[in-house]
Length: 76
View 1: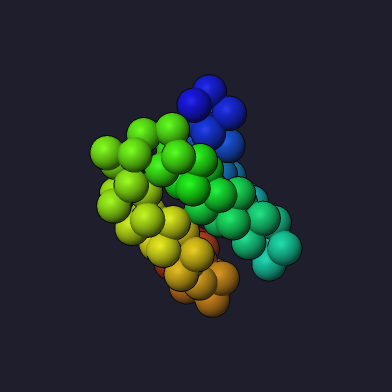
View 2: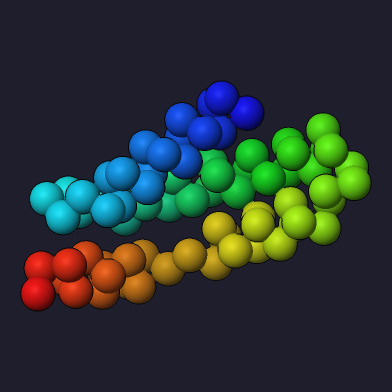
């Protein structure tokens, strides 16, 4: 869980920093890695499998184009 927390907070901090724009590769590296952690959590906590599946789907559906729109709105 420490690895997940570190990765998630790193992603969140970089995403929120108005001075940083992640490249498409960086963005998808984060989202896929976070989705992979959901798979691991489903294995470790079978009673949380449904939540893990939903989280994985959410992270894999993240859009780089929407991220760029979010970044553009930060500058306004």
